[in-house]
Length: 286
Image (cartoon, rainbow, N blue to C red; front, side, top):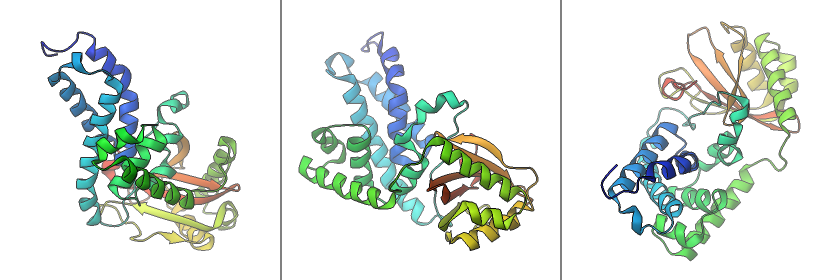
């Protein structure tokens, strides 16, 4: 703590930290980067004169939003040369009761959709639509006029609406489909796999160039089912259930020694999307 800081700055920051971390993670899709951004915001608060900050929460939100946007712009260039698809880092909840810390605002399905937006669109959408930041404050983060930011958020909102399922499923329906998939994959049962997969299911794998994965998404219930039936026969152990971003997911271990964290989107009782993260750097927390 600097001599200029208030003695309760640390406590006030600690209270704001969970929200700031969700904000940075929503912008970046990388929890390690998000933690770095929040730590940098704390260092900036220590260097600032907190006595002249009228609204500390708004100040911290602006700082974190801007730092995350800078990192996102830099990350976009790196991800363009990434080997194979790039998927967000899945975040496990150690306890189902901890779901509140990673609610639908940072659901894995939403994060994968946000990856298709420009950094400015993603930041405008996350700040305004997810975290209720007023457009004038978002404009300060993005460096554009409030009207321009309003248009960015509107474009992002339309894209998210097009790419998201029309009807949300209950947690029970989601869990039932994931567990049915786990049982069918474990036994290499093609018929049961096809039954639980949507005919237009999309399976995307992220290995970061270190694990053998499909370089492009695999589509179609029959094709995806056959692939998972073959993989299931090579599992060293059965799938393990794990909470990923507040939803039931699975961790599987293949015969090649690589693990994969699986996140699912369920539509109408069937699995419509499978995101498999095999990049070891993104599995360190699992």
